[in-house]
Length: 198
Image (cartoon, rainbow, N blue to C red; front, side):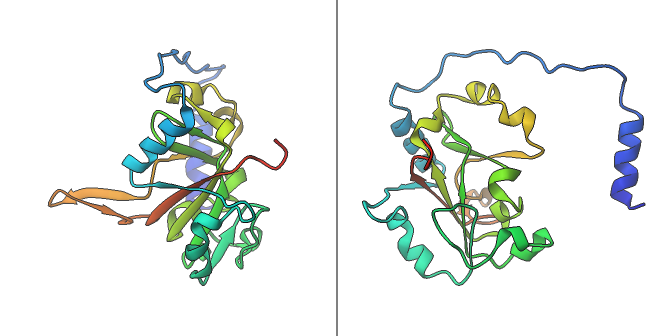
C-alpha cells in the first residue's frame, strides 16, 4: 500500500458517521452591472488576462500567432487539434513541455473574471498549471454574476476536481513587483465562443 493510499484509508476510517450537509450559500447582491460579458472582460484584464475576439472563419484568430509559434499544443477541445494528445498522457508531469493548452471553461464569473475547470475539461489537471500559455473557450451565455451564483452550480458537487482560474499566475512578493508566470501559466486568454450544441 502506498503512503497516499494509507493516508486516505485512515481518513475514511476516521470520518464521522452520518450525512454532513454543506451550509446554505447566501445570495448576495452582485457587484456587477447587467452586461456580464463586459464586466467579466474588465475584471479578467485587471487580473492580467485578456479577451481575444474570434474571427469570422477562425475561432482562434485572436491567438493564431501564439498557436502558430508553439511547438507543443495540447487541446482538450474539438475546435482545435493539438499535437499532444491529453488522453494519452500517462503522468501529469508529462505535460511540462506544453507551450499552449486549449481548454473550454464550464463557466465564467463576471465579478472576479474567473473561469472554472473540472477534470472533464482539463483531462490532465496539471496542464492548467504546467503549460506556458492557456487559451480558454468560454460561452458568453455561461458567465455568471458572482461567486455565490457559481457555488450553486452542480459542477462543484459532481466533479472530483474543480478549480477557478483568474488570469495568469502572478506574484508580487519580490520587492513588491508584480510578475506574471512565476509559478504557472504566463498568459491566460479567453476566447468568447458559444458551445457548438448551444
